[in-house]
Image 1 (cartoon, rainbow, N blue to C red):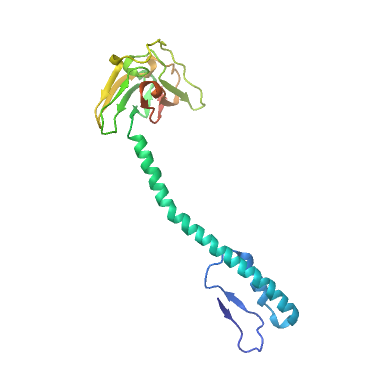
Image 2 (image 1 turned 45 degrees about the vertical axis):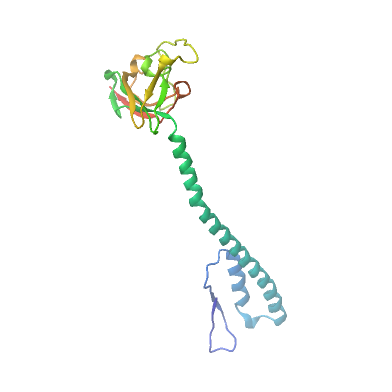
Length: 224
């Protein structure tokens, strides 16, 4: 900390403090400024009392600043490791199951019946399987999509709701080789009541039955 004084006077009219380190606690800086301004106009007993109080506060402030810096340094040192651990955990979770992927044009005409591709992707190094139950591979005999408009209103499902044998029999399963996919193309309007232009969010919702992750929703704008 540097003190700049007026060398032509026996006592400084004013002393300016220029810290050589950053102070995060502004109250300490203000108290020290108050202490050293107009020293020659203060009685000695008052100046000593003021100095004692301010010195205690200054030491306390510096200790708090040092502690905070240490905590920040520790936190910054831990964050990269924690972030890498979370990313690794996420990758591990994502690479252990099949994933449903929906593909549709961003703008579709209402007269086109809203064609969409349902893809089952295997991101792992193992051959995995899924049941066709609650997927478009078995047709519209279950409500496997959630479709909502911009107001959050769900589009009604118009297809059948079939009863099935549980657990699914072996013949209902399909296998997907590592890093490949199985897909099917179908028309949304054959099973869902989209009758008005607008923006719709489409999400696969039956992964807990078919044995795959639901994947990400897609957004489509339907025009006349």
